[in-house]
Image (cartoon, rainbow, N blue to C red):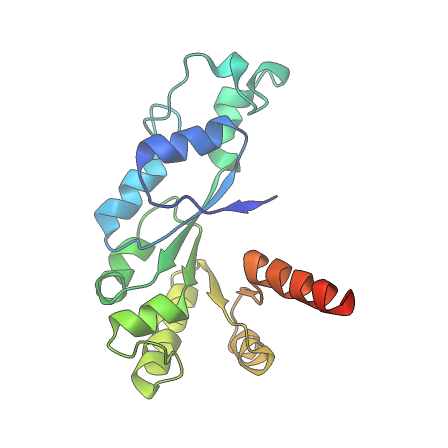
Length: 186
C-alpha cells in the first residue's frame, strides 16, 4: 500500500485522503500526545473516531463492495507520525502511548534544524537524540522509520533495528533521471 503524506495533520484533509482510498498516512510535525490522539480519531469511524460515514458508497474506500467495511476499516488503517521537532522529541513518550499510532518516522533534516543544527543531521546532539528516540520507539513496541539519502547511514540505521528507511525522495530521483536523460540527448 502507498504511504501518503498530507501537508498538515488536519482532520478534514485526513478524512479526504481516506475517502479516496488511502489507508496508510505519514503525518508531519506531530508534537504532542493530544495531536496524535486527534489524528487517530480522524482516521477512525465512530465510536472510536470522527470519520464520517454518510455518503460512503460514493467513496473509493471499497465501502460499497465489502459488506463488513465499516466494522473492519478501523483495523485496516495505519498511522505513521513524523518526529521532526524538539517539541515532538520531548513529547515522544506520550505520542508513543497513543493507541492507534502504528509507527514513528524520524525526519533528520527538520529534526536537526529544530535542534539548532540546520543542515547538519550528523551533529552529535542530533544523532544522540535520534538514537534515544529509536530506542524509545522500539521499547514502546511501535515500528520505527527514518529518512537517509546516505547508503552508509541507512545501513547503520537498519543495523540499529530501524524497521524502514526511506532512501530516496521521489521528486529528486525523477529530476536527477530527467537531467541525466537530457544530458545524454545533447
